[in-house]
Length: 415
Image 1 (cartoon, rainbow, N blue to C red):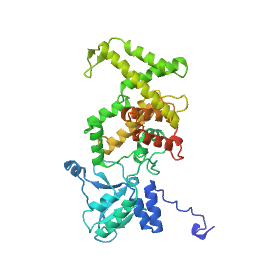
Image 2: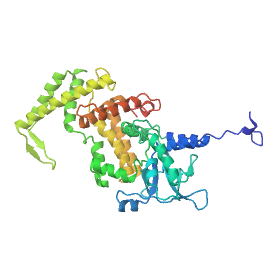
Image 3: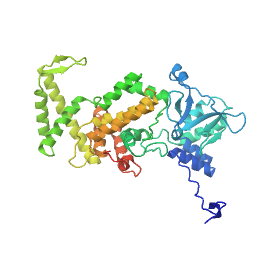
Image 4: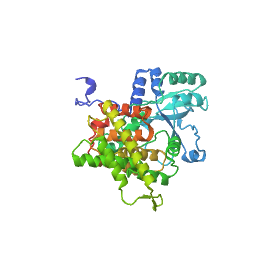
């Protein structure tokens, strides 16, 4: 035994454990720093999301604007530092301050003052401090230009500070397809995402959400499975009932016929209005619904044929319902709401848990959940083009069902 591993009394002293880097970014920074390879350090930094703290009051009063504030005094006396954290080093979200997201290329272009240094993850084993003169920023720009940012279609895990097993991890894994698409940390419960300003902008542009009340409404609609088209649910539900009653495979013609009968004999020919009242439905409107159902069945069968060819569905498999698309988005909506400060961490966690429970009740496996999620997404966005809306999800599905570090291979679907 090495003398270095003995105490003064001759007893063995356990070695100091190696630092557990939270993510691949901090690990890459730490390894480069340990080697003294600062070119490699900047290559890693050029692929990273960088976050800077900012007063929430200032962010709210200057909508869409960000401000750089010296938040750290460096190891050299009197050196002003602008501190930036990588996503694995971020603290849990609190009401104030907030963080905004940047990247090395943007910093090279928009650095405020030459006399302020760049501090990366100060206080951590992968910390580093750099001057930021115009000449230094030109070097940053060269690193940014040769590296890929933002990253896409990658499985990224928070190895320290994020749940890896259990119900919360299960609920977070229900949003993993979306996390894969954006190379987000699938198990980051303390979500900052694209930063406070951009998270709010994203929710407003994509969801029409600009308040806590609107976020709550959207959250409940997703968890209730009401965000997806109820017409999709009706058509798929007919086939699921037939499959249960007849013990398996349902011929497409049979599905078409029964769906048409269900629509035509669906009780009083009335439609429910948004305010809760009813309106008489004409025969022509009923026939328009029948025709729409026939078109939808055609789309679904063509998607499922492609799913089988690509390995998303087993031979003879079919999708029972597309609520998974709502539940997966609910898992992410909880975190988006936290990043935008429309909720707090405990509230977001409860929503993630609900998304996981509902997914486990309504689906049999991660593969079953995934096919349903992707079908819902494709019916809404793809228009049978089999373009990026489909291709990105296919790539994500393949990684999540094969990568040894995937939550889908390490967390039981049924909790």
